[in-house]
Image (cartoon, rainbow, N blue to C red; front, side):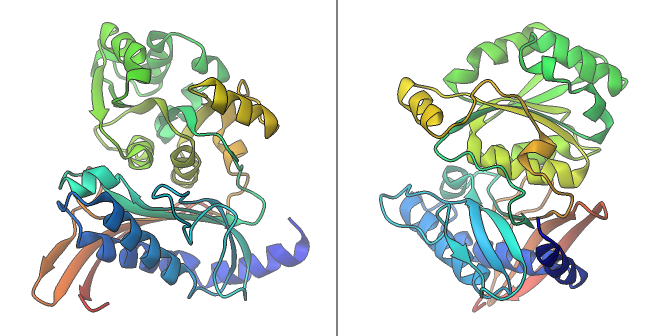
Length: 330
């Protein structure tokens, strides 16, 4: 990063751009909240994406989306990777977005749906290009020293024993979040065989990583294969929280493997959190939509709504829980 960019970004930090990001996730959550329990994936996704794009474009920054919303609906998205957002005036930054992490949870009225945004200086966020799937291990600060590259190839029992030792627990007292997918079935059986508790999630990979990286929750680790976009987003939250993460691309078919090769990516490379996000100037904001382990659900009454958000700033180690009340016209 050049001297001019660093200086400009530091000036923006002094105004705490993170609070602006919370307004973005709040606005997105309010737009998505109208679709809770609706069963309508397309309109929920569309409303949240448009709201987030509009909110981001009001911020004084020259933003470049590194992790975005690709064409899930078969139509162009204003938040696709490679798009520019912001006014164009201000710091040059990488932006990571997921208007709704857990859209199916939201439209079915289930807990765990959140709106998330991450921001870091331009050029500091690893871009997975055409990769879709990633294997991940995430722990909080107390177990950070337990994660070594060997964990990615070792049996689950070995890795969990290391984590348990650092957390001064027995393996049977550990709780492990795993995405409920057939590709993770062997891992699920391994974890169960060594006695740890398995907490299966239908969706919400990024929120699951955030829970695992947060001290003093009932979760000790996230493991398994999930989305690569959610993985890089999670890396922002994990690094800002002081936790640790290991990741590796895990293509699920030959077409994805060939796409990765053409992009010059190494599917065998084990990435640390700092390689996924090579900066300590990170802001991560999340607003709960349907509630979860860290934040309460949105509530609507009359002409008002209430939101609960989390803001993490890595440089200072600050975590803010923000409760706000809004006029629904906002």
